[in-house]
Length: 594
Image 1 (cartoon, one colour):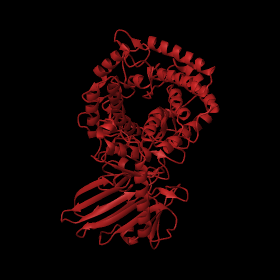
Image 2 (cartoon, rainbow, N blue to C red; image 1 turned 30 degrees about the vertical axis):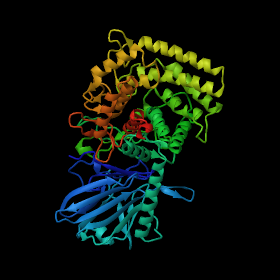
Image 3 (cartoon, rainbow, N blue to C red; image 1 turned 180 degrees about the horizontal axis):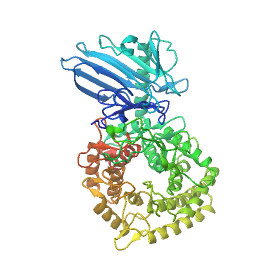
Image 4 (cartoon, rainbow, N blue to C red; image 1 turned 120 degrees about the vertical axis):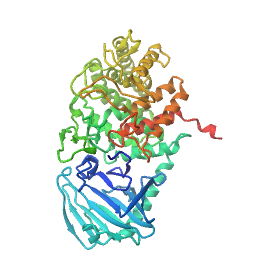
């Protein structure tokens, strides 16, 4: 059974996942949500004839894999049983050129002998139509062309073309370069172009990391999470995807297989918060511009919960029967039906994220009255919908309720609009929104409070809690010392905490009872413990979560608390953002270093 011990490379245009032997098992081109050129990650264990790109070492014995320090460049060393070794360096070029960022649809691979005379076989087997078809292939003197709809790829290399085309094993005696990218002529030798791409890409990432605002503790962990978050940024529009994959199940054979290669509004505040704390202002501003474009383009007050990379509003969901699924655990779903759902938390999510632009003087586009008026339309929708049924944060597909979290986010919308109005000096609008916020909060505290349980509950008049209630602390819904929050935390711990982990809920949903913990919920819980003064416990749980990352420091969506095996789509933006925000909250201050 394969697992999520995967590395991620990318350049904010494309991303690719590599297994421990440097086999590229997933990569969509020409963008994150495209038909995957490499799809073997989702083609089970028995159907591995195509959809991958690897360097097969004959008589393989073991492998080692690391990221180059402060970069998105992966080095994999393969050893054979006779002591020979080959080093493989993989990356997607990204650097400044001609006053803009060069981020082509390209993967570069360097292969060099490290010991002895390793004998290797190169296997480049792309696919399209979700694994259904093998592309037409033509050969040139130093290249192979793969004809794929939407993107024709060219492999330019100094490896003898016959060795690649016919997969002939050969002894690696000198360094070799393979550049897989657009069907364009390379105007210099592959070795020279590859070396230049490598050096400039390494310089870019190291320079990018130099400007991160890091905590005193856990710096390597935060740097890796920050780079991964950046790799999930589709820079062309500023959107940030929830994950690079689709249909990795949340638990074995659960059927909880969803396509996460899109941009969810629920992530907005947490992503902006993490980018702001890291000081990654250009990426934050690009993401805010993506959200502002959504707001500007609204034809009515209805705000769907998820959008495509280029602001697409239709994400029709269907099943790709040509792929058997991760470890043969289908279905493989393409698109996401959630775009049709009603989720009333989105109004608060957008306004909360956009609030940054009214208070942050670093941004080139500072929030103004025009933007405020656009946000007021969302605020009016929140006023109308705060007590209406919806699918909720967890996107229930078969039933709707009045979810406390959605109502609280409508309160957030009004509360932050009041604060923004004060910032802009709009003395008439501030009390208007403050009055709405007060009324909505009073109603929520009356209807979402269960005196028998001594706790807020997940739905109005309900009997259950879910992890979204932990965000009552984050958004300042009530003072941290309010006894109602204390009671809520106690019930959450009783019902949702299992060992060192937190489940998002325990009651059965559309599919059944959740089997794995939800990683970001554990980080939310850690943050609440810090807020209520249980710092030592929070730090212990945080250190445990760090130990749950894969060997390269990455997290997926979910975790099996018994085996500590990662499940769910990968790498998960929510999880990496949770790690960043918790680390920055929990770290000892820099002053203690000296």
